[in-house]
Image 1 (cartoon, rainbow, N blue to C red):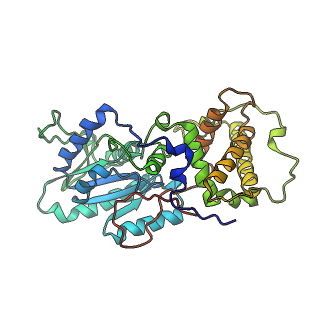
Image 2: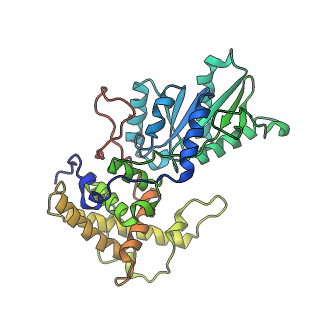
Length: 384
């Protein structure tokens, strides 16, 4: 079976047809966007945090012209959830455009330290003429901007005496902004301050596939798009890539009759998988979830390997996804007659996908030619 992806197939499937533009622009975002534009005029360098899984789709298009005119570092966060081989191609792509780019994990101190080292390196050229330098961190919602800020703060707090730890930079008043800008110090001689900013999106997302990518990675609330629709999109991605076929090795040599679902086990919440700073998940819960993940993979592998339709045909692909929903219901132990079974399946499946339990991934395709300019949203999903 050829696992290529026909351009526009996913964006044109029935679960996307009636959606049109995705509009999710809470009232505070308009004023926040204006504030960011004004603050950018004063900054010496911008750290633009993007989601490593969607390096182009997680860029705020409305701010790109202003951001590209500044010294800028693109920080591709959540690299632990992204396919490392494709991520390397993305960093090389940005570098080929003379754009500084670094892949990071905001929860890794060493990773964020490398980002700060790059910040200080990029600011060396202005140190001689500016006694105080301002660095601004921007990004769309849920790319991990707050986690980056917190990690930078923790590193900065170890560099200075107690009385200097909470020094704040005050700049203002700014045109159209009624409050001062506050930040924290990360370096001496010159003094370098980091300024935070709210996460903002464009008022509407006309490209449906870009909107689905943002929703799948959490930048748009699930309720705006719909969990079932997102789960269908997620399955379409996995199927067109042929990802479940790569899981065959997990089941080779195993006794097909001995499945974990034959054993009576207590129910656990998939939220137990999520990272908690001071709490380790119960070992029995970990084993239970591990068995569940195995059954999910087995179900998707079986349905795709036995599929005799055309993966590039929209109707065939939708039929396959329907079969997989039924298989996932069993793998995730959703009661057969549950009135909200599909919603429950969707929520649990999305949790597994987003936490990397089904493997690392990148949704945006690396531009194939050097004639393409950044930024532009990819409208295709790459094959693994």
